Length: 208
Length: 208
DNA sequence: GGAAATTAATCAAACGATTGATTAATTTTG
DNA sequence: CAAAATTAATCAATCGTTTGATTAATTTCC
Picture (tube, rainbow over the protein chains, first blue to last red):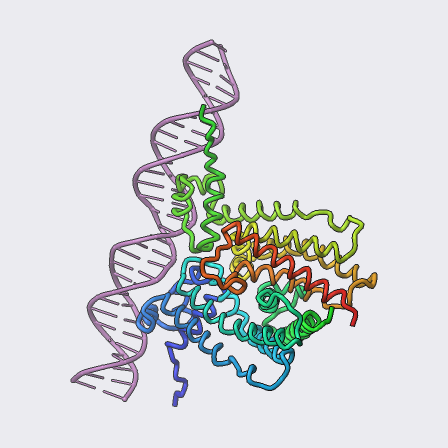
């Protein structure tokens, strides 16, 4: 009769991620997680060993998901510019579809107290970074891109997106604007993609 | 004879800022602050009323410092591009000279639990944003700049700098690299300024 | 000027509340 | 029945804050 299989384990993960995103790791108590997930407090330790175990599990799951999304863009026989544009589109979509997690990740990246987590995030990022690095470097070598500071260009692309997620008021000053509203999110996505594609096109391919 | 006036109040502020930057607000205890500052725990509440009072005081001091640094760049009779370049230089220098605080500010901006603080930071930022907005908009209106998505360009400038501060490994993959090392910091500063000035010049002034 | 009164600064100790974690008992499941 | 899942109760530790007392400095008063 009741097919509603309540997977407490997953419920804990979902609740914890939501709370960690909203109030931070230290700012979230195990009791809050238990309450929000509908599970008993002891279940947290039963399944994940500790509060930190929950956090690590969330990060691992997410990072694994990101890695699997790393498409074989570099295999396609398209121009370097076209590749870069696809990467930008993919990045903007991914990050703006997971704004809460992205915020949490960046928060963790700015702390020095959990070095293992810092390194884990850093490593996960570096894969994607190397992909972009290769695309731009190839473009420079085959003459289709200007000689630029590749790492700085990457910082610009990633930094722009992160900035939009963390401080959307910088882009939209409208007060009743909400990134969680699908309509508003779509607008921001399109603007971000258009801007970054235009920016990279002009900056990388304009002959001086 | 003894001019070593130990201002406990200031010692608390200094220690708290250091700790808040390193381990976050929730991650720092009042006992840590007391120990690090050499003050008695009760002094924190004596001077600032509460732990949050310390935090608010730090933020207010810093934000006031930033506002006072808001130079009258817009008054100078120089081109829009020149103004923008000066703003970029000022921003990079300011933020890279206060990396720890900048990290903390962005961390606070990504949380939803202290709305008053969020609004305070947002307001402080919006002043600087309006300055840049005006410079670019003026440049567009007088025909020296291309028609671009002004808010997105601002997000790019600020996002790039923040990204460098929070994830410097993206720019420098060298393992023994340290943003606290003055020599390394100088290198990053110069690269960031050169990149952003070059980027904005090409993107805003290239005729299509 | 010097005793008396007042204020500011500092301290050790303790407060109640909450933290993450664990126990032992119970229920559910296969 | 045995293993797995779940529960309420409890643990020691730590949290931010408050207390009452003490010292040092300043002000008031005669």
